[in-house]
Image (tube, rainbow, N blue to C red):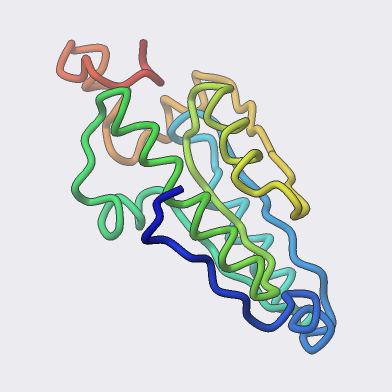
Length: 159
């Protein structure tokens, strides 16, 4: 920890949870491209909203177009692509929201790292194990077709 960094103490997070009448949880949806992670997160978001629960969805595609737009697919960039949403999820959960994160997270270590970052908060990892042929048939971005053509070589989920 840097000498220039002094953590600030604010209102206890539990008081916000009481005010919102809910306990936060981070649900980390993982799986291959095309499994339906975003659809699951969206359905969970709608169900929680119908129960008047406060939620936030962090979707990998949306994050790649925003806070992760400067990242590529090197090992270091993939790690950072997982770390940033985990940090945002923690901040959001500490504010009392149910956080629904939808990311490929192709390596077990990435989910473990997110769980470590979220220590002290409820964390649920949901692996969507949709069969590969179904993922390939959905393939809205053409990733599987491009991978089979040898156009995508730096993506671990196709390795």
